[in-house]
Image 1 (tube, helix red, strand yellow):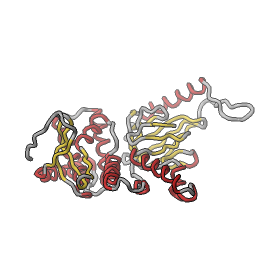
Image 2 (cartoon, helix red, strand yellow; image 1 turned 30 degrees about the vertical axis):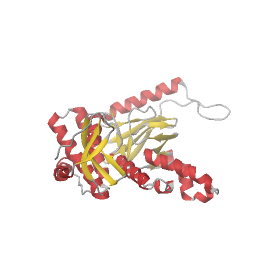
Image 3 (cartoon, rainbow, N blue to C red; image 1 turned 45 degrees about the vertical axis):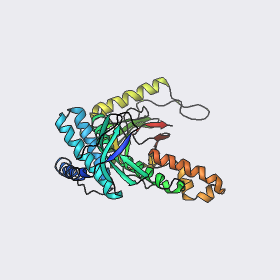
Image 4 (cartoon, rainbow, N blue to C red; image 1 turned 90 degrees about the vertical axis):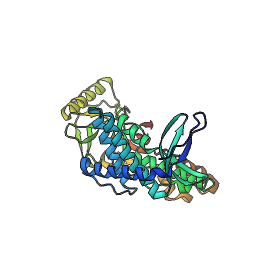
Length: 333
C-alpha cells in the first residue's frame, strides 16, 4: 500500500489507495474460512450475506464479553470481517479502497460513487465497535444507509419516493431499554421477556433470529381493574409480584441480558411483533393519492418516510408502539 501524506488539521477526507485492493481481497477471503470453520455459515459476497455477517459479529461480541480475545485474535476478526464487508460494498457498487482520515487518525475505508457524488465507509471500524462494545448500527443497516446516502448525492433533487427500501432481514433489540428484557438463555436461545396483565411472556428465537415459540405463564396475582370501566389498573403490589415471577423465570432459564438480533415476527393473538414502518406510513405507501389527494402535501410525507428509512428505524409492537432505532434502542413510545 502506498503512503499518503496527511494534514492532521484539515477536514476529514478519503484518500484512494488502489494498491490496497489485493490485500483487502485476501483478508476478505479469510472471512469465508472463519464463517465456515467457526459458524458453519456460508459467505458469497452477496448483499444478502451481510445479514449473515451481522449474526457472526453478534456472536463474536458475546464470546468476547465472556472471555476477551487477545489483541491478535481481535485484529484478525476485525481485519477479515471488515474487509469482507468492504468488498461486498465495493463489488456491488464499484469503488476503491483507501484511507479515511479524521484529524490525525487514519483507518481503512472503501469509497463508492463517482465524484463529486461519493460516500465512504469504514468497515473495520464498524466491525470493531460491534465486536468489542456490542453497540453501533447493524452492518445491514450501515449498508442501507450508505446506499441511501449515495442515492441522495447522485440525485439531490429527486423525489423522496426513491428512498423507500426493501425490508431488512434482521432487527437488533438492546437489553437496556426498560420496556422489555432481551438476552440469551443458558441453552443458547435468544429471548424477549416481559410481564403483561394477562401473564408473564417469553418469546424464544434461535441463534439465527428465527421465532421458535412463545410461552405465557399465568400470573400468581390478579391485576386490579376499574369497577366502572373494567380497564386494568396497575398497582405497586401487582407490579412487584409480576416482576418477582419474571425474575424467577429468568433465573430458571439462565438468562443473560444482552442485545439480540431477530427476524421479523408476528404474534397476532398477543399483539406483539415487528413492522418495518409505522402503520400510517404503510397506509400511505399502499395508496399515496388516497391517503393524501393533494400532491404538494404528499411531498412532506415522502420526506418523513425517507428520514425514517435513512435512520434505519422500525416498530416493535409490545403492548404499545415502540419506535426502535437501528442500534436496537427504543427512541419513542
